[in-house]
Structure formats: structure tokens, C-alpha cells
Amino acid sequence: MFPLGTALLPSMLLPLRIFEPRYRAMADAVMDGDRTFGVVLIERGSEVGGGDVRTDVGCLARVLDAEQQPDGQWSLLCVGEERLRVRRWLPDDPFPVAEVEPWPDEDPHDADAAERVAALEPRFREVLALAVQATGSDPGPVALSPDATDALWQMATVTPLGALDRHRLLSAPSLRARAGLLAEMLDDAALLLRARLDG
Image (cartoon, rainbow, N blue to C red; front, side, top):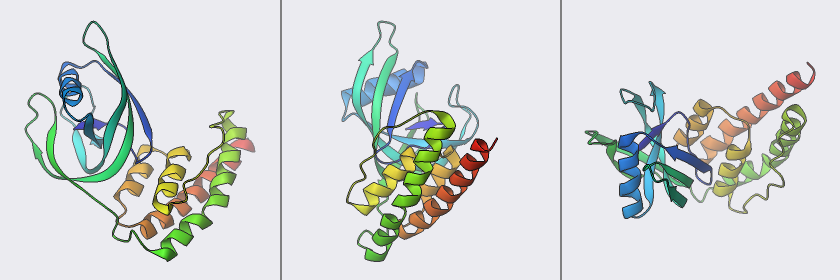
């Protein structure tokens, strides 16, 4: 398990530079195994040195690309794959370890929820356009998946959200609940970006 100051979402890319000895040991174990590990948000504390307070909802990360430096440090490019829940934290020896279980949505085939996600796309596109104007940073064309669950994760990944908002989305029990949360977050993001543009 890798507790971080960011909330990883499914489909989200996560570049990591790993230098702390315990996480270098973790990266060694991950690369010797199936190249996956869990990522959870740190509620309080720091990802360096231990002593952190961790959330119990996270995301499975898969290593897409890895490079190890001569001094043992790692550069990893990972992608979030699926939600997970921590059943029990085990002793950190030498790195964080937990018993986890996948956490699928409660309503994977909810047609109404899928329609709600599709209805978010115009607001999402508006927020993207405002963000480009306000920051000058353009993510380029974003082609959303035809699958509602995947499309929502894509929107949440690209929308300018903080770690706690991303964690709230990750913790929502269903696609319907997550669509409602993202609708509120898109409205808030649009208001903030317009205020920024207005000076």
C-alpha cells in the first residue's frame, strides 16, 4: 500500500518518484510481483517518514512503466484501475501493507444513473474550456468512454478538483451518488473559474 497526499482514481495516471527506503523496498516487491499496489489518501500527516493517518478507501494502481536508478530510486508511471476498501491495516514491515477487497459499484447496470452521467458532459466541457482560459493549460481533446462508469472517472480525473473532492467521489457507494457529487463539483469549479477570469 502506498499512502499519498493525492487520491488516485480509476483511469487516472500517477507518476511517482520513489526515494524513501521503505517505498523503494515496496517498489522492488511490486516489480517482482504483478506490478500492482494500493493507493490511499493520507488524511493527516506526511507520506515521508510514517506516522500518517490513512483513509480506508483507495484505488488499485498498476505500473505501466518503470525505471530504476543506480542508487535504487524508482521512477514509476502508474494508472488507477479499480476501487478498493481496506479491511485491515497490517504492521508496516518495512512498508505499509493491508488486507483489501475490490469495491464495485452498488448499481453497475443503473440506466438512469448512466443517463445522469451523460447529462454531465456539457457542464464538463464548459469547465474544461474555462480552465483553459484561466490557467492556459490545455489537456487537449478528451474523448469520453461510452461506458458511463469509465466516462465519469475520466471527467473526474480531468476536472480541476482537490484531493478531498476526488476522495469523496472515490468513496461514493454508487454511480448514481457519484454522478450527483460530480454535478455539484462541476458547478463549483465553473463558479470559481469564472470568478478567477473576472479578476
